[in-house]
Image (tube, rainbow, N blue to C red; front, top):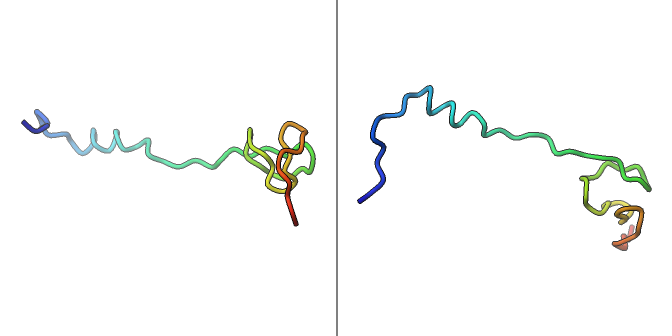
Length: 60
C-alpha cells in the first residue's frame, strides 16, 4: 500500500509549506587576535587561534 494524500493540497497550502526554504547569511564575528571576520566557535583561518590560544599552525 502506497502513501497517498486523502485530498488535493491547494496551491496556497503547498506554497505556505515551501515558504520557509530560504537561505540566510552566515553569522560572522571578529577574531579577538587579528580582527579578521570568522565564523563563531571555530578556529580563525588567518591566524589559527581559538579562544585566544593558538590551535592551528598557519603558514603564509
